[in-house]
Length: 215
Length: 238
Image (cartoon, rainbow over all chains, first blue to last red; front, top):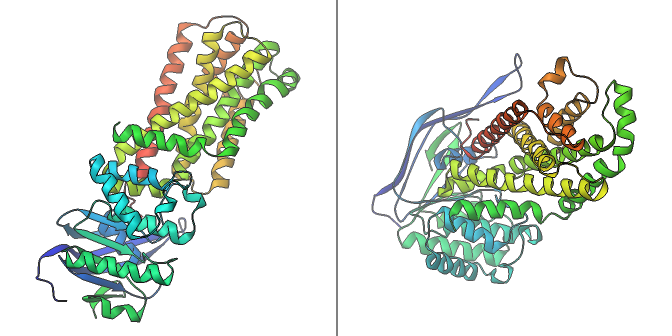
């Protein structure tokens, strides 16, 4: 699909390095060396690259979990972020997570109830609503991880390998959900590994030697 | 309910739903107050101190509250750092997450203090209950500051727990009535609280200067805890 060009995310010249070790053996590892990318409304964009190429680092810089050394990030609208590893509280239930994030997103109670019910149904994990996270399988945790990123209907969705742990049916449903939201105008940036997924994506950036190259 | 109140209640729930935490909440005060108080006098004498009897039992309750609060403070920061950061990013903000964490920590501190106080009340009796409870709470709040500070620098559960335990041991064994009163003992965070607690255990009041000092220490400890929670919830530079 070709989206009308209406940038919702623009990242320009992002540089990020990490320090490792203790002085005087301290070393600096440059991960991002001027990475730039753009995501438009109604566009499903892939971010690919080898292990350790900096895909997750770039995602974290864009959402604000990591501070960048240099460069600029421009966002236009509400942001949803699904991290690679589910960041959840082990002793809280699925319902309590929805409530907590509804407050963070400043959703009113009716909208929060509607969003959680819809997402529990769409991802088919309603029966786990009152389960604690420690009692959930990896796949169900990942469903909640994704649902929390979606519950406020963001304008831009950043997904960092969101389907690890999904079974085949859930994996297909995930793509259906993403395409439906893309068609409704959401901009989506997804870290992807599989060649078979390329045909589902509108554009692909490859992160190579710290820079994004449109593939 | 506000976002802060809901998050604070959830953060509290996160700890109170851990069965081992609940067991330790009862077992540690019992160990410190009942089991160790009888030998504490001999131990203090061996170290050059003089604490004994009801004062030793009262001091044991303070230590129990301090140890539990320090460990809980550490895990409040270290166990959910990334999830807290995600919540802050979702719109809650680092400041509101930190306030909710502080609220949960203070409630946990009051809870461990109440359990230690009740254990003391049931096992040894208390001559000066209001002063005793206040002093035990001061121990707990001070160690919330220490535990969260350790949590903001140390990631691993084992390393962090050992660091909190190490600080606790130096503090406890160099405190008033134990190994002496000079040098490093003057700098220990619970020194003034221990003075108040020993006095209360012996049925005496404490000078106003001691209360002012412990008030300032609590403010400092809670300020440290707030900073530690805020730093944990905000974006990282590396």
